Structure formats: C-alpha cells, structure tokens
Length: 373
Image (cartoon, rainbow, N blue to C red; front, side, top):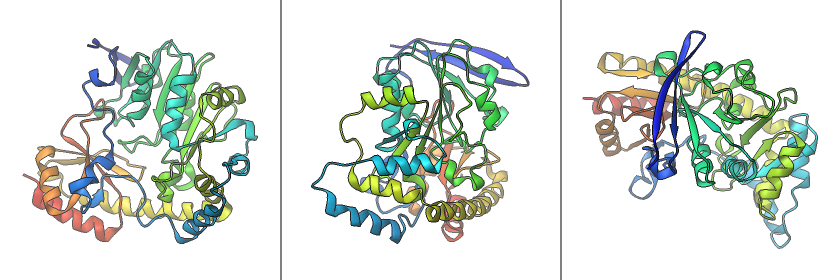
C-alpha cells in the first residue's frame, strides 16, 4: 500500500499541498480511471449528458463528409505525413516537432513509457489519466494539490525544484481555471520536461495563454486533442508538440500506424483556416453559454451552491452540500453530471457540469433546484 505524506509549501501569497503516494493506481484513494463517459453508459445512455466535455451537435456535416471520403482508402496503410505537416503549419512549427497520436490519452502513455524520469509531479485537481499512465509505467508520483481557497490557481513555487517531469492542464479539467502562460512557463527548468495539457484550449476565445507553438520554453511538451471541440471522441485523434528529440523518443514508443486513416483525414480537416474560424466562433458561443450557466448556478448560492471561477473552459466545477444525493436526484430527473470525488484534491461535495446551450441549461437549472436539499 502506498504511503502518503503531506507538507505545506508556501510561495508568494499562495499555498499548495504536496503529497506523495508511492502506490499504484489502485492505492491512491481515487478512481483515476473514472471518466465522464461512465456517467452516460448503460442505464445513463438516455440522460441529458452534462458529464462529458465534448461539444454538442458535433462533428459538423462538412467534417463527417471529409471523414467519410477517406473510407475508400482503408485498404492502404495509414500515411500521416500530410496531416502531420498540416498540424505543424497550423502552429508554425517544423514537422519534426509534431507527433500525431490516438487522442491525448495515448500521448500520456507514451510520455510515461518513453521518458526516463526520476520524480514526476502532477498538479491536481486535473485530468487523472496522466497520473494513471505514470503509475501503470511503474513510476512513483508526487502530487501538488492546488487549493480551493486560492481558486485552484497555480503557485509555481509549490512544485518541488527537483521534479524532472511536471504535468499540468490549461485550462484545467475539472476546475476550468485558465493559468497564465507566463506562470506555467516559470515551471521550466534545465533537465525538466514540462507537459501542458491544452486539450480544451481551442474552447478559449483567442486561445489566450496557449503555449502551443512556443519553442523558447525548455523541455516544453504541449498536448492537444481534436476530440472535444469537434466531437471525435470515438475516432481518437490528438497530437504532441515538443522538441525534435522528445518527439523522436515518443515516436519510438508508438506502435506502427497508430492513427487510422479516417483520424488522419479529420486532423488535416480540423486545422484548416475554415475549421479554425469555426472553432473560434464556437469558443465565443461557449463563453456566452457558460456565463448564462454560471449566473443560474450563482443564483442558487443561498442553497449551498458555489461555482469555481472565473471559469474559462467548456465546463464548470460546482460545490454543493449532499452532492452525491443531488446527482442521484438529477439522474432521476434525466440529467447526468460528472462526479468530482475521483479527482485528487476534491471530495464528494463536488460535481463538474458541461456547458450546453441556454435551453438545456435552463432545464438543468430547474431540475437542480428541485434536486437540492
């Protein structure tokens, strides 16, 4: 069984908690393999899905047509050169700095297996797959837990100086916090790999605070996903951006032909100027819908509901008394939200709610009001 030790580390005006757990995934006290899709499987398949952070009404018809057109080439082995070049051009990088992956989740596995690290650190609360992948690869993982009292904001000084791998999400799932790019860049050190999960960055208007495309930050690895904004979770497509030597190491850990022909077609289509413009419009629409949802949740503050803010992702983190019972009542009313207690640093009083259109949000808020104790 893993051992846990905690110490408070103060830097500037913020405080974070470092905890070390030397056990494997099953010993961490959190179900690191629980994800939002579990809420809408089986008996949850008919529920209104506010648990999964995939944009509703996607993929768009033009993207489905591009994917369908690739099916005539399925007899040939996938050739990722054109898609890789398109992604590189989108970020102004040489192709040697790009690796296409079967979603960002594969990239976490490749990093855990390919990099020789002694002390990996994961900044929580955040997407749990990076820690799960590290543990599955045999690593002991040190956690830096950001605190609710600080708005779950990053204090770079809380990360141990000798960490040679640091993983952080931006905007962070599930807190919806958008960390300043300069603050994240301050985590870079000689001999350290800094992994920034930007799976939801294209849902931020203008992609402000993005590090994708930067080559001046030593050891930087940026991960992107095309599954969230474009509704391609079932297709599995994402990519890593890093120095050529890091990309080469990750590529060596990949199996042959890791990304399917339809996924390659999707990748190439999703980085065209037309697609980027559409994603930009969607980001502004998401921001407006999120503001509407947050206003409705804030109106329930007198009944014990609080929202982590300012939220900047396509989801919001909500704290409420009796959240487990409220989730059950919401399911009975036809709504699925993501439980929060599987994220290190959060407890059972937390839920994550995906941003949807205003009609859906209004109906959900009405159901939530009825479900609250």
